[in-house]
Length: 297
Image 1 (spheres, one colour):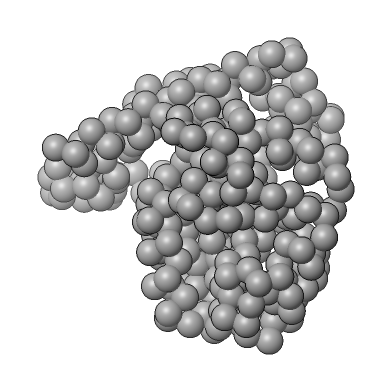
Image 2 (image 1 turned 30 degrees about the horizontal axis):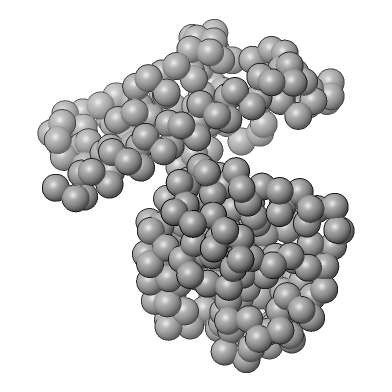
């Protein structure tokens, strides 16, 4: 995700340095810039590439930086170590941010001398196409940082929301995994198949929610109807506290989805995952274009 985030920042006019431990990782990142530029229909791909530099040197990357976005694996000690290093090398007034999707922002700030300059900045994959960015407050995050980061994201054409309480999963993943839990319950109870769950979302709920969120839908449907449905359905919804057995068995069998060649929906050949990603990205671009037309009216 780091390359996509870097490209979005560079398209906004910033000079961006990308850090990785291994040169081969940087080579793969640099190779992605052209495809991201095409996906975003960047007016000047050469200018985009010119604002990006790639390095394995933390000193070269963080020195003088005004914003640092950490996006390494979800490993608490590794993230804390990198953030402490970044704080030491970056400008004193720099904002440090983490792209974590599951670790507490407050805990990640534990080793920092200036935790008030630190916040969550949670992007969604692919970051160059998904508009949403969550700005997450830690217990000691300064109010000025919580005002600056959304403004920065607005200027980049993103849609920020401020998560005022450092709660597990923040907002979007809380919503997503609430739905995921119910999806697994429906399959485990024999109500429908994996494929039917996906179709219900991609051809129904997902299409509606891309245009109108759940609370607006409630307003449009009538809150009296909404209340009645809630009273009928809430007692029936899953309260599972452990992972689905079928998921555990699948992972333990070594089937990890597209990256291993087999997942919940069967086998994935070399080109299958690429076709799914291409279709996903095309839909994201179409939704973004439709939203832009609506805003322009």
